[in-house]
Image (tube, rainbow, N blue to C red; front, side, top):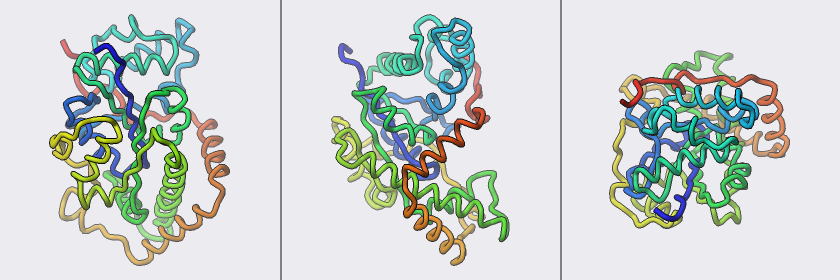
Amino acid sequence: MTDAPTPVFVLGLQRSGTTWLASLLGGHPDVACIESEDHFGIHESIFFSHFARAYGDLEDDACFERFARDFGDSDYYLLSGLEEDWLAKNGPRNYVDAFRSLMDEVARRRGARVWVEKSPHHTLLAYELAEWFPDACFVGVVRDPVDQARSSVFAPGRDPGRYPGRALPIVTAGAASALYERFLRRFDAGNDRSCLVRFADMKEDREREMRRVAEFLGLDFDPRMTVERFQANTSFRSSADRAKAFSPADRALVKLAHATARLLPIGALLAIRKRRRAQRNVVWPDWCWRRRPRAS
């Protein structure tokens, strides 16, 4: 390939359908992404939300060595198929160019002209990503707040319990849904590099929506974009899970939290979130780190 591949970032709150949509995109023969069955398809890099916060200035040799060693031991890097020492030898000394060079190399080796990254933690960094990657496209996913909250509070390993403790995760989920939807709609408005997809529209007519996304990305539609190649990343895998329902009180609480959050200035909400984030250390999810041997 002579032209650099186009970066595509799929954005959205957790449990909104980002894994589903991004993994369908990964079925296109011109698209490269980092994916695995045990990550339910596309894997999250959490590169700018986590790695770029944790290692300091990469111009410093010690910082770069720690970064290259640790990111090289992440499952994301292992699934890229790049050699163990590729990043240490070829990675530029800043986070944006390091990630760009890695993903461009993955796309080049796979003969793809588009690469896709999906990390819900990157969603509120959309404006920064648009500045760092001026040729990037963005696909945002939004979902009905009640459905999203139900999926969130019943996610694997979670149990909202009973009231009054049950109220907190439900309110948090409803408010987060409002914040992320408002943010994505503001980012999308008048932005010809952004495309917004509703989860409900994907459920209603997957082919229609994937055709629309393909056209937005300048790709010819391919039927493989509608084929689910991985187990669904759902909170309701068993009949017992599917029986977990929201009560009328739960639904009313989600809607109240969502409506209240919509009334608050979004700038203030983002400032509070940014301040809280700056005060916390990086919290690494277990799934980030090595889950497989290195390729021989």
